[in-house]
Amino acid sequence: MAVADTSTSIRTVSHWINGVAQASAGEHSAIVWNPATGEPQARVDFAAVEVIDRAVEAANHALPEWRSTPLSRRAEIMFKLRELVDAHRREIAEMITAEHGKTLPDALGEVARGLENLEFACGIPNLLKGGFSEQASRGVDVYQIRQPLGVVAGISPFNFPAMVPMWMFPNAIACGNTFLLKPSEKDPSASLLLAELTKRAGVPDGVFNVIQGDSVAVDRVLEHPDVKAVSFVGSTPVAKHIYEAATRNGKRVQALGGAKNHMLVLPDADIDMAADAAVSAACGSAGERCMAISAVVAVGAVAGPLVEAIAGRMARLNVGPGIDPQTEMGPLITREHRDRVASYLADAESEGAKVVLDGRRDPACRRAGFFLGASLLDNVRPGMRCYDDEIFGPVLSVIRANTYTEALRVINRNPYGNGVALFTRDGGAARQFQFDVEVGMVGINVPIPVPVSYYSFGGWKASLFGDLHMYGPEGVQFYTRAKVVSSRWPDPGTSKVDLGFPQSR
Ligand code: NAD
Image 1 (cartoon, rainbow, N blue to C red):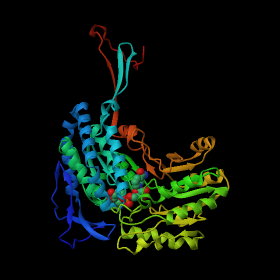
Image 2 (tube, rainbow, N blue to C red):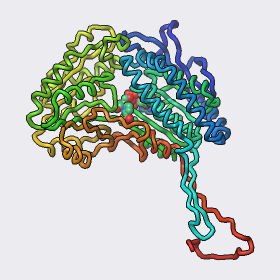
Image 3 (tube, rainbow, N blue to C red):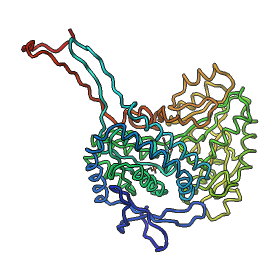
Image 4 (spheres, rainbow, N blue to C red):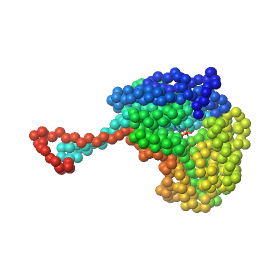
């Protein structure tokens, strides 16, 4: 939402184009809130079409030299960037806590998981090695090389303002592309610090650009003919829009969407361990993680004791400002989002669920920030709004199932397929589950199975539009295109006209 600025004292967050932080040009803007106090803390510019065009031009201009830069030099720059981000961990994390609201340890964890992707990109000379087939035919060698796409763009969500950009741009630029980042307008500052660090690391001007904005900026990126590929992470309706618009305009696209992640607890599971995991994965970052657990599916007699163990743990959580070392769970991102999440609690009872713990009663809700305590709903069923929607807040639903088969059916029928966890002590059951479940990322006794950077991240079904997952080997594949060369160096004396279709001899 673009709003008029009523304050002259708050700072302005603007764009980073061609290696230079841009002064605010009095464009449309929005308030960046402090979720812990409920007050405005900055103003973020919204790029107009001309600004996007200027950023694409800078990226286009930087492209020929950057894609010609030797791999060893690109790797050296990625190493330097890795060192700089490492040295600025705390500063980045503090920005995240101030604008997103998550606790400082959680924000530090986000930076650490982002750093993994920089480490992966340091191996770019090895990652871009192609195949070579000597003597594919008589005197003919065939080999494959991977080349960058050109100018590529990344559009990131509010919930990981540093990590998700680092899922995208290290691999993109290491592969020889130039990059445009459009961060979330809700917590835009970390993107500018990352931009500054890329410059200090030796990334040439124009190779990494940041444009702040809303759908106007995104739509221009989607239609700009010089933008060759788009990586998107955000909600499913927007992911679908991005996928459709980008493909219609002939771009390569990976659009990661929303989620409804289940945790299946079998009767043999350790109840305390399962309850610890459920609460951590449901309430970490106030449930604003795409890999948060939002539904526990409890099989058989485990349900009663599990609900009790989860409720006890949730009730003890310390909710408060993310910067306070005592805080375990911070506020939600905006007042509107907090109210939307709370509305599910208001409706749950009338839909037939049991509200075991109502986060609206948490003492933190009396603070001025956008707080909501942890909430637990029992006897939830598909068809209820609290189950069908992605709530994206600290609300955990418990579904009771009689058998593994019934539990599996619930999970596989859900339209989303991002992450899932199984808690059990039975290796055979776990193996069967990983075979059966229709979800892209599976945790066996691991509640938030975000793959390490040398695998790739991506859900199934309505959690991903596109073919390739993000970061890791599939990230390198996404940001490059293959070229196959067939070559021979015959004696010209042997040359003759031959109209037959070439075949191996
Ligand atoms: P969002 O979809 O509202 O916004 C994501 C990005 O798209 C932002 O940069 C935003 O400015 C832009 N945007 C918003 N509306 C747009 C429109 N109509 N047209 C063009 N661009 C638009 O998502 P969010 O609220 O920032 O993030 C939370 C969502 O992201 C949740 O649904 C969560 O599950 C999802 N998410 C998914 C993953 C994943 O890997 N699958 C990771 C993180 C977050």
